[in-house]
Length: 65
Image (cartoon, rainbow, N blue to C red; front, side, top):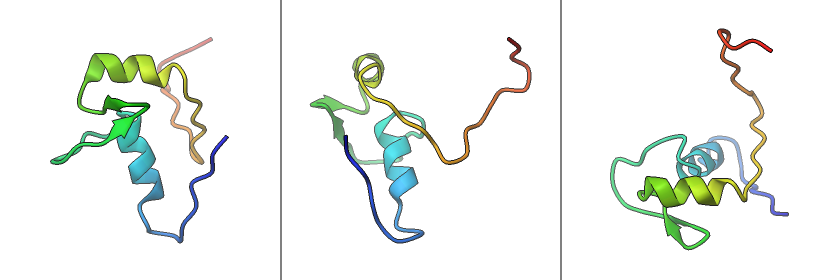
């Protein structure tokens, strides 16, 4: 288990979302578990091994139980 700490506005949420493929970088690259975040298929496999709980989960209002 890891924590990602820093002051408000430091870019913690943006960094995590970039690493998980929820946001797309405009330039540059990063790796998650040895996989480039630009490799969409490999990133999907990496995300299956990671848990992420956002502070404000976004629920799709059109999806029902």
